[in-house]
Amino acid sequence: MIPALDGKVALVTGATRGIGQAIAVELAAAGATVFAGGRNEAALAAMIAASGQAGRIHPLPFDVTDAAATKAAFMAVQKQGGRLDILVNNAGILKDAPIEMTGADMVAETWSTNLTATLTCCQLAVRLMARPKDGGPGGSIINMASIIGRMGFPFHAAYGASKAGVIGLTLSLAKEVAARGIRVNAIAPGLVDTDMTAGIPPDKREAMLARIGMGRAGQPADIAPLALFLAGDGARYITGQVIGVDGGLVV
Image 1 (cartoon, rainbow, N blue to C red):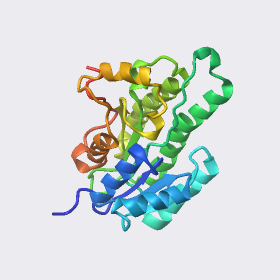
Image 2 (tube, rainbow, N blue to C red):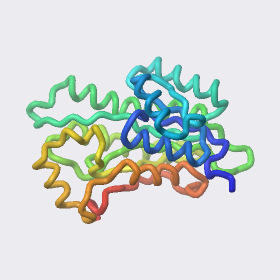
Image 3 (cartoon, rainbow, N blue to C red):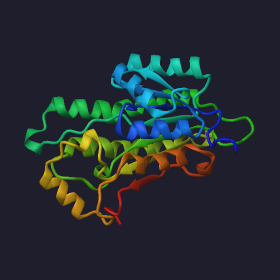
């Protein structure tokens, strides 16, 4: 049986750990050649060595907030992979503060990483994702949004605004590039156990858990299968969607 993504080339940002790592491994296991993006070259090497997919996952160290470095990274994907079929914009940061303490530097850093970098990567990906001549499925862009961008959460104004922006970007871009055969969708995770959410205070975490219908936090492995589906031909007629993966937190 031919793997679902055999012959496809993917780029996953923020792939050194958590959701990004799980998605990179999932895509590689399905047959894709995966370029794993991240700022820490040593962490990328360690992730790849532990993935069991060392032959299919290739390190691509760069900082998504550095426009020149990001452009160079996409050029490297084109040169080494010959094409780009799948982009997963996963890189992001999470910082919380009361609105009175949400400073300009925090807002700028959050938006630069979560929203501006996502838009930049989308721009570069669209240029590389050629419409298939046979009329088959084209490229797939998958943006990582958040439940906070959909329904809000106290003390997360900057983060929530950035992820709401990702949703707006996803919907607008999906309409713009659909005629080119490029699909654009977003995944909106709920509470997922990652290093990024490890700093949530216990009382806030328990309050969130109490609202989750399935009674538990998600795991990166709960998110990756949806990314695999959206990347593949089974989702060839799906675009402009924001799909929640939250265990029943929003129903």
